[in-house]
Length: 240
Image 1 (cartoon, rainbow, N blue to C red):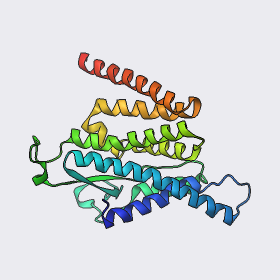
Image 2: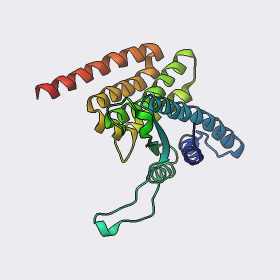
Image 3: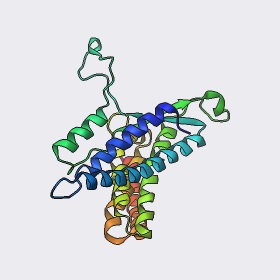
Image 4: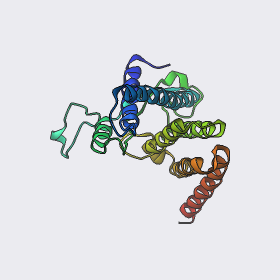
C-alpha cells in the first residue's frame, strides 16, 4: 500500500509530530527514563492517527482509480523572480514544526508537515468523464483524511478516557485543513469551496465539543452546525 519513499516520509513525519507532542513532558525536572517512555507512548499514538488518516485517503483515491503518494511539504523558492529559483527543496513543514516546538519549549505545535500527490494512471480511469483526476475528486480524497481523524477522536472519546489520541487526532485534522502550500486544506478549498467550510466547521466544532460533552453527542451537534454553516455559505454564494 505504501511505497518505500512514502514509508520514509511517513516515518520522518511521525517522528517530528511525536517530538512536537512529547517535547514537553509536563515534569518540573527532566528525567530521561520518563521522557523516553513518554516519547514512545506518543510515537505509537501518533502512528495510529497518521496511518488511519493516510489509509482512508488511499481508500478514497482507490474509488477514483488513482493512487496517493505521501510527501513532506517542501518549497523550492524563497523569493520572486524566474532566475532566482532554488533547485534544492526545503521541508518547510518540518522546519516550522521544529522551530515552533523548540522556541515554545513544546507548549505550541505546528502539525502541517505533509500531504499527498496524485499518481494518475489513465488506463484505470476507463468509464470516468476525464482521464485525469479532477480538482473536485482530489478535494474529496483530501477531505477523507481530516474526517477520518475526527471520527477516530469521537470514537475514542465515546469508549473511554483516551485523552491523548483524542487530542492528537483532533489537532492533526485541524492543522491539515489549514490552506497553506500543498496541504489537504488547500486541495479541498480550491477543489470544492463549500465542502471545505462544511468540513472545517464539523472538524472544529467536534474537536471543541468532544472534550466538553463526549464523543457521539459532540459529533451530532457538530454535524448539525456544519450543515447550517454549509447551507448558509451556499445560500450567500448563490444569492450574491
